[in-house]
Image (cartoon, rainbow, N blue to C red; front, side, top):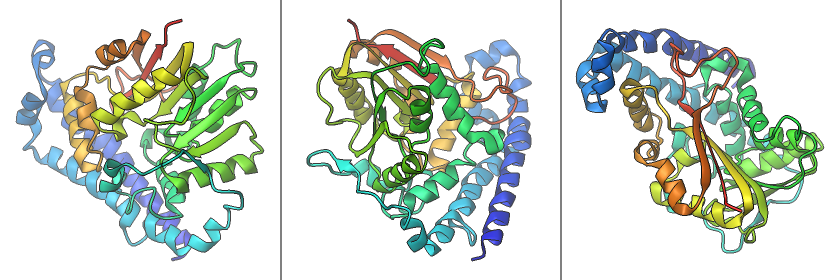
Length: 352
């Protein structure tokens, strides 16, 4: 297919998604907000379902969420077809060595069973999977437009005290790094650090390695490993991070990953995760439980049900802080009238 046809098609899908974000979502939320606040505060997900679940507006909203994503990846001018047609030229970008693997590395069964985000074959099964995922990520948060990368810079900025940026020295592990969407900003804020970037998907790691080489970023080591078994030695990591990893793992894997993080952190070390957990009300909980199955993200709903503070405390973490995360300057997490992910910053320390 011609690139201009692909770009025009993807731009059209994004414009429809913006309408879905800024018009359809407020329209279906309006019936919830019309209720007395005292009544709203007492409602649970089932109550919201009873209120709007059979409404035409909600059904259309749900249909659009599912099928716009399908068009984005698998339509006639979708990401999948476009990149597979260009497989050879894209893979030629991978000129270096393959990423290191931990001993006895295997892809988890849960990771292979579902085409997460509706990306055909997942991000792991095709050499161009990383390119497809990277291009798709640009329109995951429509309100950010072309500034999607700002989300990752804003997150990376919170990892270091203002006076420590550019001077911070230590070892960082970035869990579920993907193609390095947060790893690269972290490397910029802490250029004297050593960063171990871990992911399951070799295509994403290869893309991250190619980008790091192109940008002459020398303090990142990409490694194919499971976040539950990093291969890092005990008490060797100063800072552990992840971006949108927790909701991609079943509950048992999340627990294993957090215990592994505790093991590898030095006493006094810090872990910070950016994910989806805090929500304003039962309406948003209803919307994102629906998003979980509409977008092939089966572990998002179980994450919402977890008592994260208790889990972290039981593992041994202290100074736990869970707060809404503002993904862009113009967005107020508490009052935003449009559809947005419930971004949540989860931080904790290992005791000295």
